[in-house]
Length: 281
Image 1 (cartoon, one colour):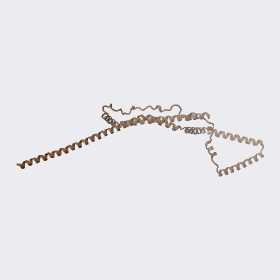
Image 2 (spheres, helix red, strand yellow):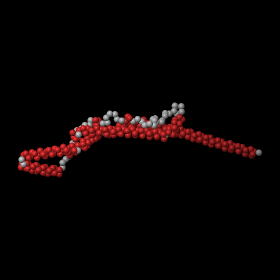
Image 3 (spheres, helix red, strand yellow):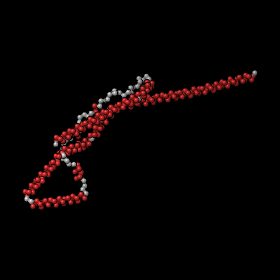
Image 4 (cartoon, helix red, strand yellow):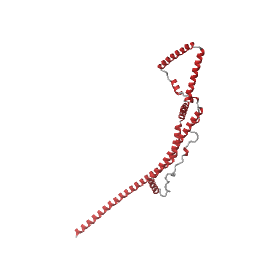
């Protein structure tokens, strides 16, 4: 049974190793999916990127041009081998060992909880009644044993003790495999929970995943930021040209108005001179 219990512990440890490996593989799959999505977004925004480059050439003429904003990386999946854990997956699992209580089908926690609970008056009355009944039974056995010879009494007590021992041993051994599995699983679960096994591995994988995607996300954000800045410069340049055109339009409108006034004045002077000449004749 001790060897069986050690086999149970090894099987549980292998299962935990497998589950951690599955989580690491899922994290790698998530990273590659996110990279594929980033590249898809880049492809959809390619026309904006081309327009950005054209604006950069216009607004930064003679300054050497802008940086390349395409996301680096080939179409192949990234290597995610760094997500794999190094060494042990759990200190609690390394220090876990068998205890004699693992082979006993007894709920020690429930027993301690029951002994620590306050006993009500009704419970005390029930216990007193049970105690009185037990006392009466003991007295009856004593009176019965006085009528039987001591040899017979010893043989009966020995047979009863033997039957009780054999029955107890059979009860313990008959279901010991399930008892060992349940007790070992319960203690290991409590130890891993106290250690924060699931939380620690989840934090490790989420941190590594974010660290892997952060440079590509930053580059994509930088690309869009530069596109927005280029659009703002283009808009500012258009507004400046519009204001200049409006000022020129107002200037030419003013010149046109003055020219019209001068033309009307000249026409008026020319008409007045012709009238004076005809009157004198």
